[in-house]
Length: 343
Image (cartoon, rainbow, N blue to C red):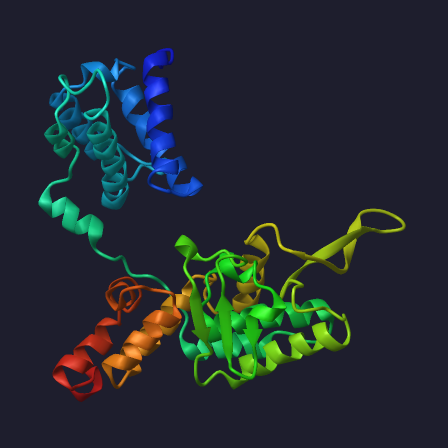
């Protein structure tokens, strides 16, 4: 049975999380992970006072993580272990600088919350990320219906993902004024759009997606000429739900407000790929699709840099390391100049 909460530890954890939130500007999602990591260590350590911390606890906890299993019975992933230990390392480093702890805990003690070099390399290795091909995305888009206003909106959502790979949180917060069809651009202003790290991102439409531009233009024409939306209205308004006369509820136009979550976009993407007989990809997969296409077909460094900026990456290495993986066959062809058929 888990011991009762240690009030001293709880106060310290709360102070640490306040520091991480307001001084380090971490997101709520990241803070949730850090809360879980601190709790995991606290429970394993029997709720002992953090003031009694010793490096043997760090080494023991690392061994505990190495032996832990997930709910499905599999060993913890190295990236998960790395994330948990990184939080504990930051916590102990912070603790060593607090009044009453400086003489007990050294900054170097935090280093014991680390993976082995081998495990660290495995944790940092970018796993293969499934993503559709350009042709798969085009087929799914072509098969999407376009008769009703809701179908037009849904097809435009899929189209914009094909054209830009915009992050889904940003997509649901876009306003009509942020898209310029003539310039083929999307302006992601962090004052109005939920961009990652609050960055300003100027994104332009990818080449070879004329069908997507038509679908997006068709929806924006409907917004302007039929729905009479203005520049500050949401680009993709939420579906309005109305009570039916007999029972239940049904879709009834739009609410003229943004979606409150990203789940509707995920459902749209999932349904489109399923209808096309394509594996189930999420909205983020479009970013991998566009990055891999750029990595494979770019003819200059400038093209790679432009593709990276288009995705909102500060460093082109982020694009290449995390998104630009190419298949084994493509790697072999680029290095040897031969395809498997030529052997």
